[in-house]
Image (cartoon, rainbow, N blue to C red; front, top):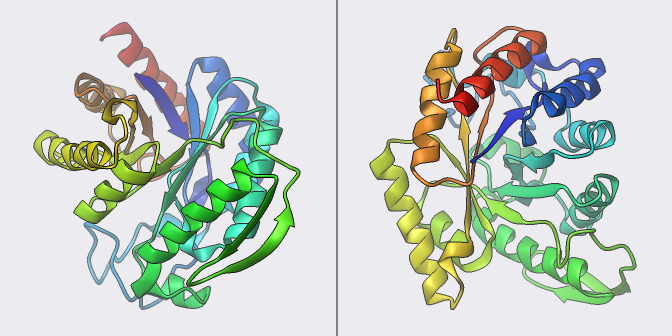
Length: 296
């Protein structure tokens, strides 16, 4: 199983001057992948609560300070040569797909073909409203974005006319290094999300859940792949783990071992809510990596 770590991006970890060094050191330590997340707003009175949070504490405090995910990933791409670079997840309906395709293609070029494009639809209505995206149609917008990304990545001349965007037939001379495009991994834990993964995507960017729950969701994706005439065994699983405050390397390694034993292709740890600084995050991450690899 591939093991990754989130780049410093949120809250007190959001120190732009440390991103390149963190990425280089994580690669040198043996991590297989580096990841970023996506937030647009931290409303004073949010429309929706982050899963597991309360009205008095509606989302992680780190959401109040956020570095742009694609900028952070570009810096990491330029500072490394081996690790995969993933988004978990970009809230795709916020972005004009033409410009999203250009940016993702550029990152895949800069990294020499190391991008994993993890896309989601978001959970907070306030964020969608602020970027003029219809929250109620976010699933349909994602489907159309997937069509446009595929077209721009795979064709030299491409046009699109859909329910949300129109692109005149145009020349697209810049293509990703990875053909026909970077792997597209989709987030979500609903039945509809898992069916979309099975029928349209290369895999799932999931989260650590009870084994039975995750197995049931994955079975839904596999069935959808079979129904679409696709190979369910080709689907990838990359699972995100967000350890709580003061979790030890032993605690985190035990979770990663369970994920590995479940058959996932990769698991990455996001330590923003666990330790106060990027330096501590990298130190804890390396200890965890060593424990998992040694079987301790």
